Image (cartoon, rainbow over all chains, first blue to last red; front, side, top):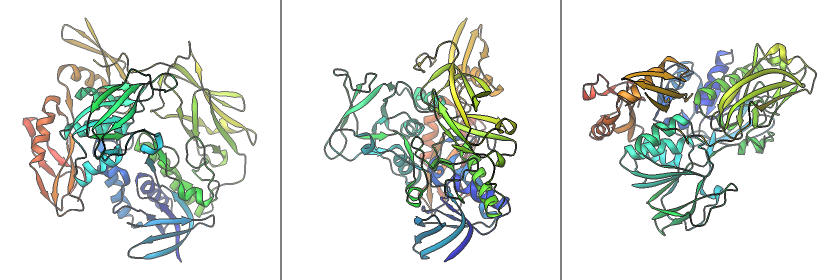
Length: 433
Length: 117
């Protein structure tokens, strides 16, 4: 049996930040377990710029952002194991893992940080009809092939889903000489950041078809064409609107799901909306001493937010190991309503808050000119005007510690209130110059 | 007077800009930071972009290494820049920030590696 104070599962941005922060908070004997051949996680394949604006006040590429943390981790002498797969963990915080040099390992941890990230939804998850020819990739897989392994995945491409990875791959494939025919999006708005629509689609004249979906994939051995149709409000294809695009490749950018097989097996309580663990203000799950951070908790749109959240998890894990995390006192619950789809953390113990509590949330639709209201125990504590909110852009709210002094079991509610009229609008309609 | 509606791409905030053009003078509205103002004017007069891509590398962990322009280059030179990158072959080890191509198109901008390998 190997013994560590803190074991971090996952060596991506979340795991790196958590491990470094745990060390900075006075804990030694930390292990990071990574299943890939190097640290850095998915950042290593995200070679585009735009990372680190909050964290470093400069625009870095994914590998650059990762390298800064990898170098810091190494300089601190934090131990890590690559090419290592965690097979199982349990409520006693015993982990079993395997790799080709150490063989099978049993590892006992005082605290565990879950930082396994997320994975892409595939063709199976959205049930596209038709044959199963070669040439259908998730956008992230294509990104890894093109940016790391050096393989081009196709010449004529159609993309389904307008998440950020799909948009960024539209530009990447175009730069590498492919012809991107169209990006189809089921919803009446894009799931990606608006700046990505501008610099990845508009720059290269790639059409974005909102309220459209794929009704057929043509081809037997290799994709030969894609049929795209418009959908009605119930997302049902409208007959007669079908258009065929000749192509050899289909990229799917249809959502990310937190990767929680290990967590569920160990008995971690999950949130049905985020598909991640239910966590408290310390990013601790229902299993004492098991923390979670990054995309394994909820899918973030900026890595800077992942880093901030993971630092909280790492610092909390250190506090837990040093017996400084407070369990007594009141416990509050958060609840998103009226347009607010979910809030992380779901549980708050004011005793552990230093100055302010940060709540992170996503809205369920595109809204213009609304007010975001925070109520604790029925009493309004905060109100913010929002010109524009969208599901693709995470919102956050800071609450002062003194506002949190209320009875055990109280609710912190966040919801949207209409200013003039709560209008669901299709954005991007009027944009583009 | 002409009004242009733009989305700022400088940072993930994605501010919605109104750029008012009057006798070759530009007024930017809606930006939350000074960089948005610069972007609004530049986008209408001389649009530029940062290019990120990969080049071949020998003897590294991978066959490709990511590179970027260390500043923005004219938008119409992006594909030309990609062509230059096609011809490059590096040898490991390299450090992040090593110069791959110096002063491309006389812009004063270099192409540099964006990771160590």
